[in-house]
Amino acid sequence: MQSIIIGAEALLLSEHGRRIAPGTNRHLLDSNLHSPARRLIEARIEHADLDALIDRQAENGPADELLMRRLKKRRLALRDEIARLERLLDPGEPA
Image (tube, rainbow, N blue to C red):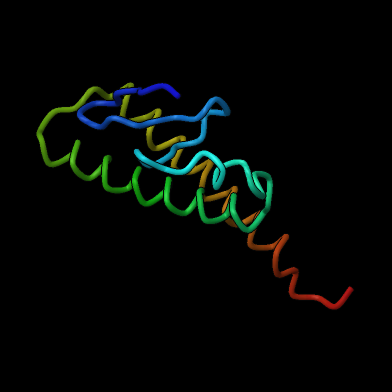
C-alpha cells in the first residue's frame, strides 16, 4: 500500500492502483476484485472525489493549471468509464 498526495489530498492506493480507505480489510479487497458492479461503484466514488477536489482547488485561488487539466481529464475519463460500465450492466435491449 502506498500514499500519494495530490494538492492537499492524500490517497491510499492498493498494489493495483485502486484507492482504498484506511483500515479496510484486505480480504474484502481481494474478493470480487474485477466485478463490473464493483468497478462502477469505485469509478463513481473517484469521480465524486475529483469533483470535490477540483472545486476546492478553484476556490483556493490560482491553481496549478497543469494539475487542473490532468484532474479534469481524469474526471472525464471516469465519466466515460461509468457510462460504459452502466451499459455493460444494463444493456437496455433483450439479449
